[in-house]
Amino acid sequence: MATNGETKKPPPTPSPLRNAKFFQANMRILVTGGAGFIGSHLVDKLMENEKNEVIVVDNYFTGSKDNLRKWIGHPRFELVRHDITEPLLVEVDQIYHLACPASPIFYKHNPVKTIKTNVIGTLNMLGLAKRVGARILLTSTSEVYGDPLVHPQPENYWGNVNPIGVRSCYDEGKRVAETLMFDYHRQHGIEIRIARIFNTYGPRMNIDDGRVVSNFIAQALRGEPLTVQAPGTQTRSFCYVSDMVDGLLRLMEGQHTGPINIGNPGEFTMQELAETVKELINPDVEIKMVENTPDDPRQRKPDITKAKELLGWEPKIKLRDGLPLMEEDFRLRLGVPKKK
Ligand SMILES: NC(=O)c1ccc[n+]([C@@H]2O[C@H](COP(=O)([O-])OP(=O)(O)OC[C@H]3O[C@@H](n4cnc5c(N)ncnc54)[C@H](O)[C@@H]3O)[C@@H](O)[C@H]2O)c1
Ligand SMILES: O=C(O)[C@H]1O[C@H](OP(=O)(O)OP(=O)(O)OC[C@H]2O[C@@H](n3ccc(=O)[nH]c3=O)[C@H](O)[C@@H]2O)[C@H](O)[C@@H](O)[C@@H]1O
Image 1 (cartoon, protein in one colour):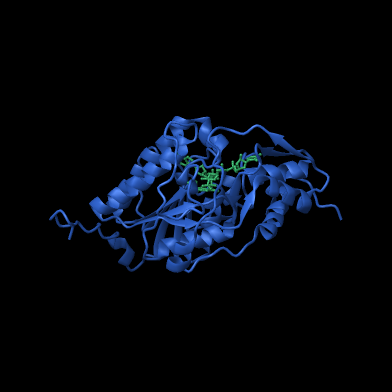
Image 2: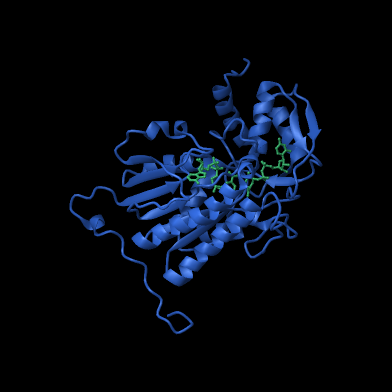
């Protein structure tokens, strides 16, 4: 019973087809942004389960069909070119809502489009969830904490965000997306899950993505200086993509709405990260200090107590073990074989 005296409407029941005799899949799952970095790894994992049908919608702004090449043509897989700022009509049981450019250079490239994706796109996906009674998971971000004044960041910290800065299309956009999720949950009884993802890295990141790990690895392999943005003492905590996917699946399947931080608490300065990449990948490269961009958060590290307690999740892969896996993928794509 809602506290204002109104009876809370239960969400609509899933399609009756799910119980039909010839219905093969137990679960039809929509992944928005599934052609992107995290999305495509999530799709790989979901497709491992023969009971799942997976539909990816993506506008290929930062994603690529190449990331999903092994599934194209598979009977349990569909790939749709679609921009989520437009309505979408599909019948699904779960929605992993990832669509949004994630690298700062891409999300700042067309900030109006970024905020439309976060607000109108999330509204569209919530409308879809409401119509078909699907459970929906939003991939929010540690950027909702802005330039945090509390360290490490627990989920109940409300953040320190510049609402009119160059990053706000993304961080404020995700904050509104979280608000929309909770309003649909409270008003319409939609089953929601919110993950606050902290910097994630791994194979399939765009080579010229602009994010720090992909930049440093590509630079090290090309023999170019590693560009540490000043002052270099700013910190990030890097989570390997398979750990991230595991966390997202647990959150979707568990009983908790979140928001829940999913990230690796191992914290590094950007100078330390550059030194580690240099040591592991190319000891001959130089490390160069370059100018930074406005509003760059000075520190970031997740408090993952909730993820541990509520999801039984914690990351397994340390940065020093994850970097060589990403190096291997970048070497293949850049055509730079390892010297014997
Ligand atoms: N990778 C990280 O470190 C990180 C950290 C925090 C949050 N996240 C969130 O996780 C999600 C995935 O991030 P990623 O690193 O895989 O980024 P990505 O850029 O590789 O993937 C995003 C995907 O969304 C698609 N997309 C963008 N706008 C769209 C639109 N309007 N309609 C349809 N598709 C659209 C892109 O083409 C791309 O395939 C994003 O929501 C991002 O905000 C990522
Ligand atoms: O985890 C998150 O919540 C967010 O993290 C990142 O945003 P950011 O941490 O700014 O990512 P990067 O662009 O990789 O920058 C990380 C740090 O590296 C520095 N950097 C970046 C690039 C570079 O070449 N050199 C360099 O020192 C930046 O100044 C920054 O301090 C992601 O890009 C967002 O999508 C995500 O939501």
